[in-house]
Length: 124
Image 1 (tube, one colour):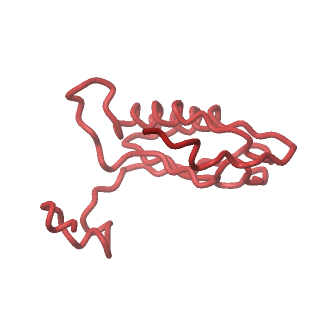
Image 2: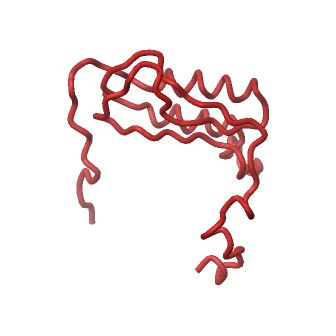
Image 3: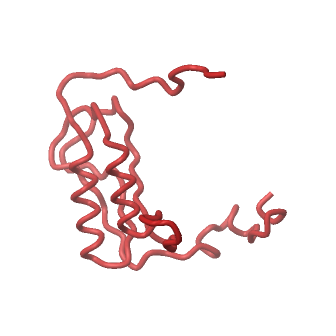
């Protein structure tokens, strides 16, 4: 399917032989433990766009090497100091700012929470 769309089929089995890599990769570690009770997904998206992974304005270039990886889901219990993901950036300063923004976008609580539904409803 990748080849049919003009892509390099090696990306399926060996993505790093084809895709660019960010110059800087920084772990995202939570400062305290708790249950992830909420994630501000919009803020994660804006932080990712600030790295260059998305467009701020129409016509802006997209850098396929940068971005944010966040692994836990709402309802997961996290330990203090646990690595929950990584920031892939072009500079240390950009990475540090993205880590700060991601950590601010996470809400940790003490009590268990129900994960949100994957499907909220059907329309049409």
